Image (cartoon, rainbow over all chains, first blue to last red; front, side, top):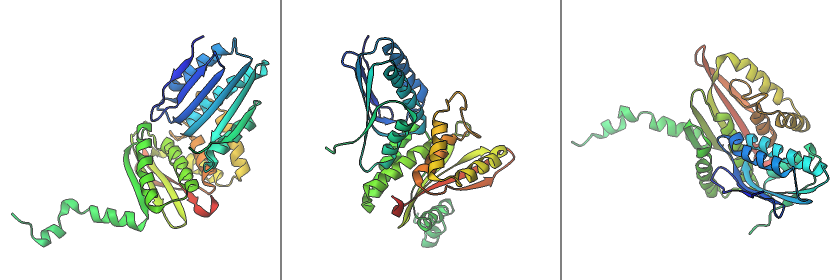
Length: 127
Length: 190
């Protein structure tokens, strides 16, 4: 299975889904014009990955800001990861947030509450 | 030909400029946009407001909150039907306010008002529950909310602002009304 790599734009995040190392990353902004159009290829890729996932998958979300339309799609991604985790393959999610961004922290807490998936909230280290 | 001082003072073509400037000053408006709202615009608008905040040396927690509220306000301003909306940012000593104004069908005004009145009665915990419920509703089940307004965005704004949402409706004609919604960020709440 090939990796999925999408470069970031000023309104869509950088996405790296690496099936060889089980490392997935989402970083940047997510305010796409057509959120479903942007996230659909990611859903399709994850559905294929779910058929033969690695024993361990680590997913990092490091987002700057996003709208509620993207929040719904991120929830759909996390639901797919939750299903992989429930099938006995370890999935660990790290949700990064800026220490000054209580909304981003709260969004991570929302996903923790809605899903049966280990989601660790982690303060970004300022460079 | 040189215009007289009197002609310069009463140039009718520019009669809007001073009232607009005065209005912006009186209402502490630091940014105003009128036109179609698209995601392409968001980044540019945030940069401009960031520039204005730089002048005020605003606390990062407050500026983050303001940006998050602006990003969601854009979702409410996207008017597929009519195109043009307004986005206004006000800066007062004790608060910031982000408002969005757009046309909505006159037929849905009471529904929108009832929804906003209900949202304004919810406690933070209830808002959280309602937001979670809306988050789990698939777009296909409820594509546009009421009259093109995504209701999850209203819940999100209420939640993020930690304050009641202020709103107004202006009847234009049987087809359209102008809807304004303001989310306030009280600096002492952040």
